[in-house]
Length: 320
Length: 317
Image 1 (tube, each protein chain N blue to C red):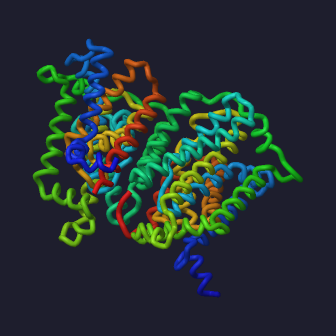
Image 2: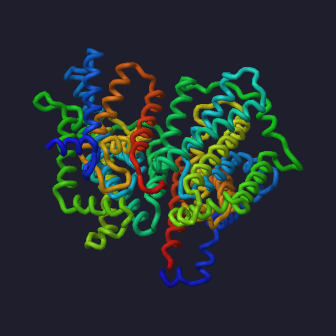
Image 3: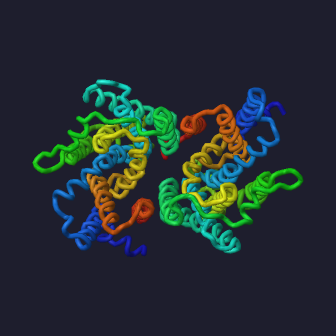
């Protein structure tokens, strides 16, 4: 028992990575905010916090799926902006909502195909789709504006039994991701492929009959679809389409994933770690806002955290 | 498909960097659309605008030869522009600013190199994070407003001409030749080539892999500082947005020039033409009336296309 607790806290000998420590950090920040400020520990601020954290939690779960197979998706931010722009196109919701997910899946498919079929490095492939999608978004909506369908706005702003809808969004997304990663054959395959790639044996999973190409393509499609869910949520919050809403979001998701103890080289990581990582980011933003820290400094601090958490992970090989 | 790729003539053609083809296509497009624009004076102005990018490409190609990447150029350019334009160093002379810029680039490049070579952190993450920190810092120091004016001497130097060729363009060509000599004639150049080809084999052959990677990144930082000086001379004012899209364009130009993670088929002149392609591309797009979103899409398509071009080539046995 003592040994396993130590392993969880240190992240040693585990597939889940180091997630105990970020949980501790999250608790410490909450404790500090509760003591230091009177506004923090109110139901209103906490529900607000959940609503603020939700897009990051959703998109970070998508990023986790890709990171688990040793990839990285830098197009997440653009897909989020793109989703809000498409939703504000002034068409009926019955057309727009399926369209958003189809388009996101298409972007993921292009990423996956470029990576698996054409041998392009994941970072280069997703970097180029980031630019292409951003360009299309700016054509659709040069500046923020338009209105999203009523149903999207209603889905994020109401409450049920005194609990605001964003909390339910979180529960649904996390349960779905839990089922995908830990309750399905696909999740098992993800860990198998990632573990092989991390230890330098790219063909390990294939040798055991796991189709790596198809699963990797699917991972990028899942990631883009999660980004689209985050985009729908954000569109409901800001009520309009905004081409810049997802700017630098991909780096926040990478920070959240890495903060949650997931190894960027693949194969090691956990859903709960990622959710905790995203919560830590949201808590920090909340705390810095309450402490009136300049938004520019907040950006710099986020960059510093990214550098620190990724810098602390040791890797076997140098590279991208 | 496979048979075509295995054909010796196709394989020979595939070894030529895509930048040469793209350059010719763009030149032909411009010649058809606006033949009167193809004179030395107008082209000189367009090419002069691309010089900061062209210089940044030189650093990018060195780090990409050792299978790394440097996206921190935007932050370095912004920080140096801030140093020069904010008036924090009243009465400072040009040599002082040059030394300050080079020292800044050196320190940031060394830090990147240490994190990537020694700590083995993902190069994209490190350099992006460094860039974000620097941009956040500069925007905080200048409270989001453009800082101030640049000493007049910078712009005067930038506007000089030598035998009717703009000096910045000449400087770019000389610097490119210097990097070309560095990579082809020195021990460091050999190390860079061998680390890019196979880091493990290089290590077991006695090549100091880690030191080579750190040096490559330090060099890239220095070159980014030079690009920052030229960029500051070109816009002649302080800015909080200048140069932010340059690193990604530099990656695109380098890939277009046939230098992709570890492979250096394009040498130094392939990426040189890659940068020239972007000079022409912006002219062509302006002529055809395509705005900023179209440029973003073109950048993405070029990076993806060039990377696929390379990926297909590697696949062939």
